[in-house]
Amino acid sequence: MKPVIAIDGPAGSGKGTIAKKLASHFNFAHLDTGMLYRVIAYLDVEADKIKELSAAKILETAREIPLSALKSDAVSLKASKIAKSPEIREIMTQLQRDFAASPGDMCDGSVLDGRDIGTVVIPDAVCKIFITASPEIRAARRFRALKRDNSQITYDEVLESLIARDKQDQSRGIAPLTLNDSYVVLDTSEETVKESFLQAIKIVKNSLKFTER
Ligand code: DC
Image (cartoon, rainbow, N blue to C red; front, side, top):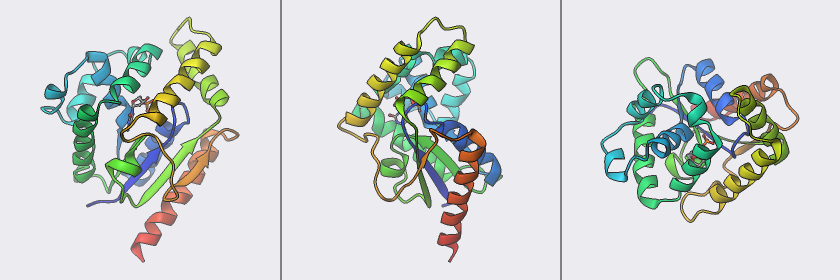
């Protein structure tokens, strides 16, 4: 199997941005697994129907939905809620493993970002990074992004819903967001995207070197 980079962390930590940049830097395929949960939540797809889909098919469907709708607070909370279902998680886990097993001939590996990539989906990933930041900083980032989409939401409402989602993602019975010592932690609270990205490159290079030895 081609190498997999697992990136996990809470909402608004910057993990999606870093994952995307790493994928392009290392010529790896990128899968934003949160987006899969968002599309399923937005379209209210039942478990039976998800079984007939692939990650690529779900992402293709996502392109037909306005990004602002998929990223809205209501869909974020709903995605986090449906992500508690063991039946849905099992099917989604398989879709993600299939993606990592076949990232395409043109790609040298894959980068998956989410909540349970390094713990459940691909526990033997060559590199695992846990990207985090304080709740206030994460809320401020999300607030700025929602404002760009002309949302009327206030900063306090964003912070409150982010804390509620953290709690839901960390306390669910199956595949909660958890940090263990197989991860390298990257705290982006005080860093620019460029600084975090440069650190992430170092972490990945180190892991790849380690597995080649
Ligand atoms: O990464 P995100 O904020 O776009 O994810 C939206 C929700 O989907 C998140 O609150 C929980 C769920 N999710 C999950 O349970 N497992 C993943 N691997 C990715 C996302």
